[in-house]
Image (cartoon, rainbow, N blue to C red; front, side):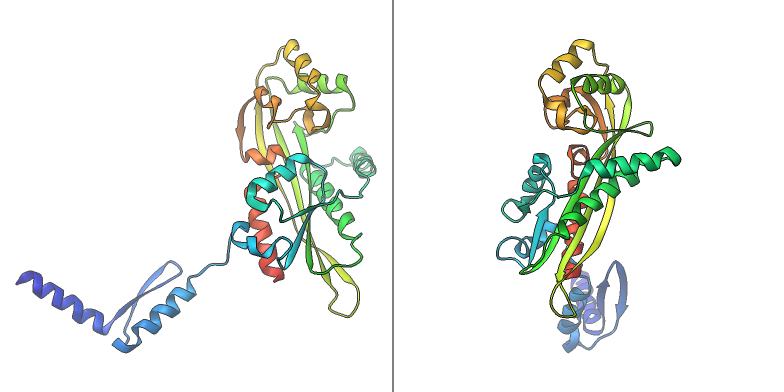
Length: 281
């Protein structure tokens, strides 16, 4: 009879009150019995959060989607990362027309009078890559997002970019041997939309950011360095190594996003793409 009494009391309580969950807060409000279903629907609706990752927006990308995504890069590693995110067939690849050498020279000249922060350096390159391509799109059928990116290796504030030749690659690897360095990957998103004021299009920056990871190299022997450079892998990579390939053997530890070192921080890109798409739709 005690059990039956408790059950009866609980039933009576639910007839006069209802617990409403609202974004992490717990409160007790009184409602007539007939309004409980309405309140429940309103409560559940109020706690629905917008999609946080691009995986929730797949249907908006691709040939039949409302948004076109363009990767402004020739990097096979960045294409691979987007494919791994499930975006294969949902984005186009168009190399940026930006002359990176001129931008790098300009930034180096600036560094002669004032130190150039590696983070701002890679952010600037990512922004200018995306902007240069976005501005070449004379006409669009739908809203377009242009994704630009740049990756550099930072050894105690010194920027180590792609080697100019094998000797340069060997020198770089010797400097990295047994030491810790940073890898910065800058990312920029530009939106190209139809003008609100008639014919033409509008180009604007949506977001730019830099993600960093800390990489610790093993102690490398001269034989290791010579053999690795002989593979040819270091020649088109910032810092003269590729962590996703043979060069992964040189790395003892990574602190941060592995994909940042590879060339595109997957998680952060997913979040920023999702947010940009929701803002544009």
